[in-house]
Structure formats: C-alpha cells, structure tokens
Image (cartoon, rainbow, N blue to C red; front, top):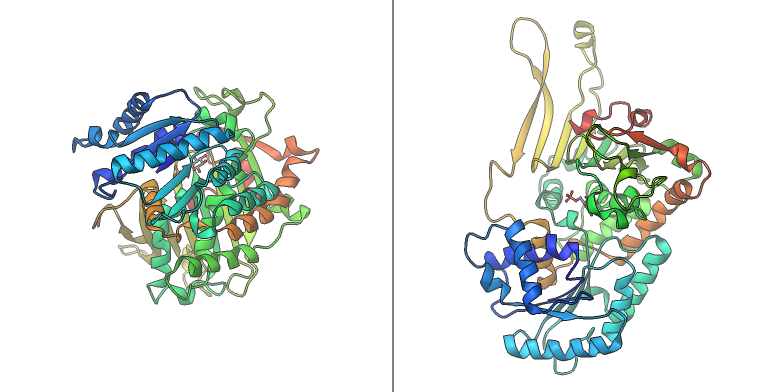
Length: 484
Ligand code: BG6
C-alpha cells in the first residue's frame, strides 16, 4: 500500500492505526509493505517514529506486535506534480516488491486535500503505475477520500481525471460512515426480516429524522472546514448515504452494483430544491462562544466574519411511490449537546385513540431507533399499560445492542474499508454516478446559501453544548426530542 499524504492527519489518526489493527488481528497478508509518500522531508526512520506515535496513541498494542508492524513501513519524499519523482517511486516500488515479496497487488491510498487526487492520478498513469503491465499478475486499486470535489463541476473533473487513469472497478471512494458496523446492519435489518418491510412506507411512516450531532468543534481543521462547511462536509456524503440506506428499495441480490443501483435511484428521486423550498426547508447555524469554549469565529484559522455554517437541518422529500409525502429531516452540527448518530423512523399515530378522553392526550407514536453512536443498538418503542390501579400508558423499548450481544470481531470503520479495498469489494464505497447526483441535488441549496445578499441573516448563532439554533423548531417543532 502506498499512502499519499503520509505526513497528514488522516494517515496519523486513522489509516496507519487501522492498518496496525488489521495486522494485529491477522488480517494483513504475510508479505506486505506500507510506503508513506508526501512532501515532508522524512526518511524511513522518521516515518516509523511518527507512525509508532500514531499506533501507540490510537491502538491497543498489548500484543507486542507494534515494532514488527513498523518494520513493514517505508517512506518516499515526493512533489505531487513532479514526473521525475514518480519515476523514482516506480523504481522504489519494484525494489520494495522484490525485497518484501509483496510484488503483485498495489493499493494507492490518496489521503490528500481535494485538489490533489486528479494531479496524482494523472502522474501515476504517466509513470505507468495505474494499470497492471504485461508481467504483472496482481491488481492495482486506488482509494480516494471524501470530499469528492467541492461542487458538481469539480467532482465531475475529479471523476473524469481519475477515469482516465483507472477503471471504475479500480476506484474505491471511501465514506467511513458506510463501513460502520451498525450502518451496514441497516441493510440486514431491513431486508433479512419479513416484518418491517411491509410497513416501511408512506402508509405507515410519518417522518424520518437522521441525526449526526457532534460535541467537538472544528478543532485544528479550520483550514479545510472554512471553505467546506457542514453541508459539504457531512450532507453531500454521510447524511445522504444514511438517507439512501433508509429509503432504498430491496436490491435483487447482495452485490455491490445491485445495492448501489438502488441507492442511485433514491438520489435520483430526491425532490429538487427551488429557492423558495430552500428558504422553508433549510436552517443553518454557526456556534458562538460559550463559557470556556471558543466560538467558531474565534477558532484559529477562522475569519472573524466567517459565514461558514457549522450546523444544518434540511427537510428532504423522496419523490416515489414508497415515500411520497414523508419528510426526511437531516440534522448535523458541531459543538452540540451530545455526539449522537442515529436514524429515527416515526410511525403514524393510531387511527383512533380510545384513551384520549381518559388521558387527555395523544398517544406517543411508535418509533424505531437505528443507533450508530454512542450505542450501537436498534430499538423499537411502543406503548404498554403502566402498572397500578389508575389508567396510564407507558412507553417502553425493545432493544438489540451490539455491546450486550457481541459475537465475532467487530471491525472499526477504517479497518473494514481498507480490508474491503484489499478484497476488491465495492459495496461500501461510493460510485461515481451517486457522487454526481448528490452534488446536483445539493447545488441549488449551496448556491442559495452562499451567493445571496441575505447570507448573514440566514445563519443563526447557537450556544455551544446546545441542540442548535432555537429557530430549528420552525422546521421540526419537536426537535431535539428525536435526538434524546
Ligand atoms: C468526517 C467529517 O467525515 O466525519 C468530520 O469531515 C466529522 O467533520 C466526522 O467530524 C464525523 O465522523 P464520526 O465517525 O466521528 O461520526
């Protein structure tokens, strides 16, 4: 594996720790090497030192395999646009292949800022590194991380340049949300049980709320986040993937393209936004300062007048027979009360409540919670009689929790994503058509938010540690209840 951007945050925080965990649990082949590539002036020893720090900070190293693992790591300094450096890379890869015995399969991991994957793909192709040659028995694949471009045009450019170097089955577009165990489980839950599918539609579902709230602020990523904001950072990818898993039709078979076809149909069915609909169905926020917490505009690297949103709620409709009229509320933000990732399906009220006269209130709707964080659990809420002599209803939950009933090894999202790349399984990765459809869907929203004179007045400040701006209730009156 060759990690481009090896001195960056992603390699240090996620990729190398995930590779160590795979090594530790026996999921890497006997013969392999990991070559870090970046502009930083390191040698093998310095790279190994940095990665040792990454592994000891992020992984359980009790098995004592860390130094063994580090001995598989090498480093190559490279300017991303210099053809000469790629020639040297090709020579080095040959040499490392012979030295380690890992000469057949090659995985390029582009852990790079969005402007660089097109450059690197082109240079790899020019150096003859993007396709297996006549004497090459194995495969070559490339991994690219979100954001896949900055808008529709740049994502098309990214897709086109990558397509000139690699075929679609060589390209693995990672969205780490898809590799989360409980996100994968949504497909099993929906399509391996007969009892949920008949009620999974407009006749029984009242609304769906998809939440990804975070407690942390923008941290040291302001440089990236300032030009991105929550809609590009979370909605174009993670939130729309969660929506597609909830809304898609049953695929005909368990095969990457059959599943991705169904998701693509959902993306195509998203009701396009008019300017008026954006005004009614989108609410943006930015966290202000708290007691001992910096506001977004005080974070280092953020402009004092920044209008970058750190919170959004978007009400979306899927225009097909199954979902006509059912609103999907997507909510995500930084510096909120809790880190919660979950989807909540609200079922319709009972058609007539014989308890209303006695209790004086409506009956709480049945809800299905697909929890991804902090619990990895699925629960269904329903009404029961509260014990005692006086009539009262009590909401209870039926729960399945991965933590209570673990069986087998549960892989972290990056471990699973990397393992699937090595095995050539594309189910959990974005396909080019889906990426472009999601950008086309969001573009009117982004345009309306970013290029209008009333941009500042659309951005509502919220207190860190809250559930977002108060004004959210104009879109979803019972917010934040679904998150609690
Ligand atoms: C990333 C975003 O894709 O997902 C981050 O760039 C965000 O801004 C992160 O914090 C959230 O991921 P998770 O797995 O912690 O929910």
